[in-house]
Image 1: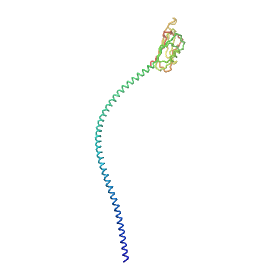
Image 2: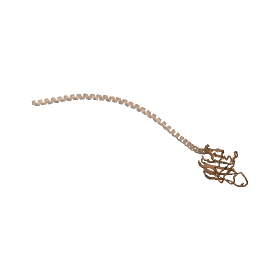
Image 3: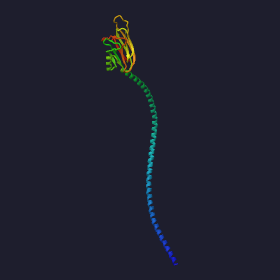
Image 4: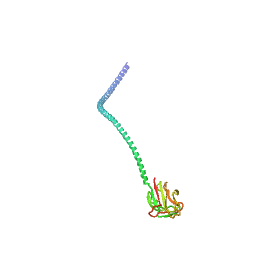
Length: 268
């Protein structure tokens, strides 16, 4: 019984000690929890205050945004009205541009015609600038030997021929083409040589023949004029010369009397 009583007292003490410890721990935990609750309450109060300020700011911003949207809607309406007006003006402008384009096409057609005429005129001017003409006569009179080139030393007219070629022609009697084209060539000789022939040669190829007849044979000296005339295409470097072809031929060409002459003209 005594042991039992001691055991019960011991158990009772242990239970009281544990309850006391539990009570102390609870009090400590309660104080810590109260502090945390208080701190949380303070935090919530601060958050509510901040949230209130945010709500007020948001309300103000929403009000401002609504006002701005209203202004933007008004601006959009004005822009829409301007766009409609611009569309009408654009249509008018496009119509005007179409009319201008039509007029421009007409004017371009006229300009094309004028440009064509201008090109034709330019070609004509260029052709005029490329004109070639030469008239030269035999001076003095002399006997041209058969197959020799007859020389025309007296230059009457010279156009479009360089000085070098003109000097060469005067000394040799050979015309050298510098400007390609269609040329008219004519030769007339005054001579008393009966039955005389002379030929126009184009680069050593016979082009035309002139003849002094023998009508006055046996009747003394009688002067006659005979001619040879032709048209030919000449390329640069082609040569024109005149030679007695049957026998030697006396050619009249006293100074001042231009009876025996050569004329060469570029006609195109």
